[in-house]
Length: 259
Image (cartoon, rainbow, N blue to C red; front, side, top):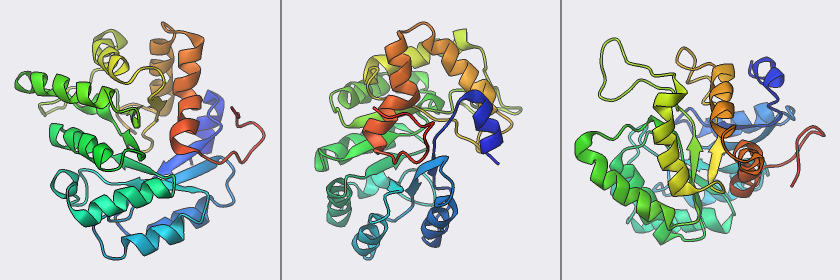
């Protein structure tokens, strides 16, 4: 379903990020993408604090398409509450030992601070903060938001996926307010670029979650317009080179670039 959308836009490689709490779906996804060279990897779902985490991670890590796990504000997961749990700390370090990635999703201030603490617990672990443009700090949160971004900026293994740039705005309203104008979105993107720099931001279409809010062609056009004001080198890093650095994805087709 994604290939016909992606191909006309020049998208030649895709990393699937899990959308299910079922452990069995890790295997299902790997089997599904095994014969699809467009798919260069997947981020799975394994519960860090579970007693079976280590054994399952060791098993899935044997497949080079398995590039890490997502653990954020979804399915009752609680990274802020678990980040000091010895089992979770051991799991974070085990991810790093396998050279895999931790992704967090559905950002709030507590989850951003948890990413900082996770990075301190496992300094070699690469962490991807998903969908951070979708977090709209309220006026009373502005000071703490600047503080946590300052801490994140100092941790070179924390990356940001600039996805969900177009999104229903906080606080929620009916009907939701959705801003699509780059001029209005640019200040927030500039803040994130200042925090992460051009070496730690990656592209994400957020498809199919973004269907009805920002279709893939619109998302690509928006970020192309934003990066048109920056250097070609910065754009190349954002659109693909940084994804190699953080995900270490597997090149599976001749049209996929290599460093």
